[in-house]
Length: 198
Image (cartoon, rainbow, N blue to C red; front, side, top):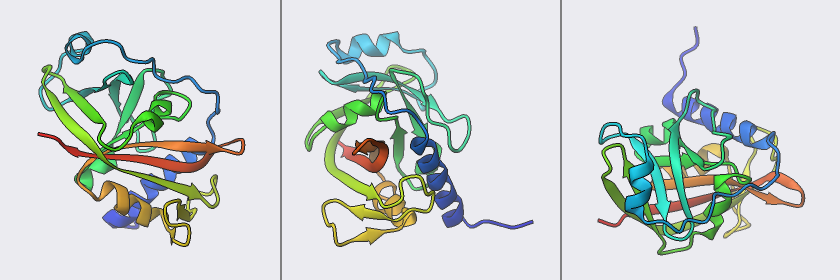
């Protein structure tokens, strides 16, 4: 039996997510524009314990439910949801994944300083503020071991492990989706990174 190190497990999961995002359709179905209050939205969510993340709210942008991964590569294919990325917690972050043709389409509407509110099962909330936006081109979008080019520094090529560590290793809230370009729905990756605002 082969024992895998944590680094290899994280890389394997990241690769599985890349594969999952690569083979899905590119028909956009974005999260509905949010015109409700965070209190009204929180009241609609299923009540669980205070540690369970159940919703994400951004005023005038999105109000979506959070679902948990049923397997390491699972990303919800339902509109109005994001998927909590299990491996992100092992890196000390909260990771939320969504397809760019579903709720992930709203991620590109978030800019530096945008307030993101997480809603927990008991109705409590925690505010985050966007501090960084990272974009990468996948050099081989359907290859699970693709290298990436940092679009802010095109001379820099990174491995999938480097991208994971650069984004999820921050201990922050990270929203991830694919970037669609030139007819390729998996052309690149978008990461919205936010830190606690209080």
